[in-house]
Figure (tube, rainbow, N blue to C red):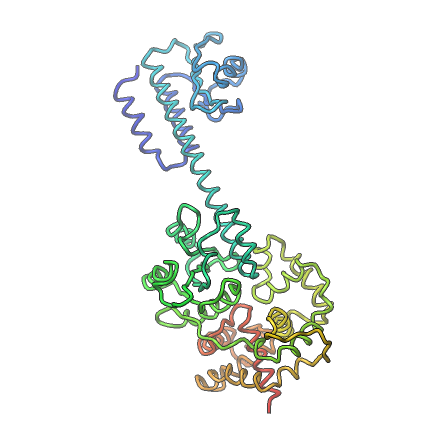
Length: 494
C-alpha cells in the first residue's frame, strides 16, 4: 500500500527528472508505478497508440478496452473503471486538450483508494514530463527557425536587397534594418561555441538587440556578427551593443580572433564581409587577435568607368542569358570553396561543378586557374558599380582590352601600393613564393615542389603575406584576386 514515503519518492523523481530526457523519464516513471502497484501500466497517446508501457502488458487487452479508451480520450469521461476478464482496469484522462492521453492501470486485484491516488499523481507527473518534452521541442524548433531567418536576412543584405530583407521578416524586422550603416565583426571560435554565444545574446524576438549573430554556413569556426553604427560616430558606444562583448570574448579566450570591417551602408554588406575576412586574417597573426580593416579602394572602382563597363559587359555577354542560379553560384564560388557553396545553397557539390562548367565553357576560361577567376571577379565587380553622376553608356564604345584598362596610371599606382608591404616587410623570399603559388594554381604542394621547399613552408609564407598585405589568402576570395591583378599590372608596367 502506498505510504507518505512513496509519495515523497514520487516528488523526488520529479525533481531529479527535471531537465532530463522526458521520453526516457516517462518510461522510468511508468515502470516505477507498476512496481509500486504490482500492476501493468500503459500510457496511451492522443492518437490511440501506446506511448510507453510496462513490459508484460498484453496488447490484446488494450484492443479490448478500445470503447472505454475512446470515451475517456474524447472527454466524455474523466476516468473509468472496468473489468477485462480477471483483471481490474482503471483508465484516467491526462491533460486538457482533446483528444487526451489516457493512463491505463491493469491489476489482478481491485485498487485501493491510496493506490488510485498514487496512480493519479503519477499520471499527472507523466503529463508534466510530456509537456516539458513538447516545450523543449517547440523551443528547439523556434531556435532553428530563428537561425534560418537570421541567415536569410544576412544573405539578402549580402545581395544588397534591403527591401527583401524587410519583407521576409513578415512585419517583425530586426532593429538592424533601421540603421544607416553597419560593421561586420567576424569572430573565429571553436564551432561548438557558436550556438552558446548566439543563445547568450539572443533576445525574445530571436534577434540580438540591435545587432544580428549568424552562424557562417561555409566556415564552421566563423560567427558573423552584424553590428549597427551611427552615421556620425565610429565609437564602440554607438554600436548595437555587441562590439565590446565580442572584444572581451577574444581577450579572455586565447583560441578566439576577431576581424572588424569599416562602417558601410547596409546595401554594402557584402563589401563589409570581405573586409572583415581580410581583417580576421590579420587578427590571427597579432598578439591581441583583434584587427580592424584598413584597406585601399578596390581596383574596380579606380578604372575608367565607361571603358571598364564596356569591357566587362563584353566579357560577360556569353553568360548574360544564363539562369540567375548559375550566375549566383559562379559569384559565390569566387569567394568560397565549392563545398561551402553547395552547403550554403543546399545543393550537391556536383551540381555546383556543373553550373561552373557551363560558365567556363561559355567564357572560354579555366576556373581552376586563379588568373581566370580574378578576371571574372573583376568583370562582375565592375558591372556592379554605379556610373559617376551624369555619365551614361547609351552610345556604344569600342571594347578595350583588360590589359589596356590595367595599364592606366591609377591601376599601376594601386598595384605598387598593394605590393609595397611585401617589399618593405621581408626579403624577396615571400614575394617569390607568392608568384610561384599563383603560377601553381594556388596549390601549396605544387608551389613547394617548384621552389624546393615544403608545403608547410609555403603556407607559412602565405601567413606572413596575409599579415603584411592585410588580406586573406589561405581561403579563396578577393585577397587572391587582388594579388593576381597586382602581379599582372606590375609585370606590364614600365
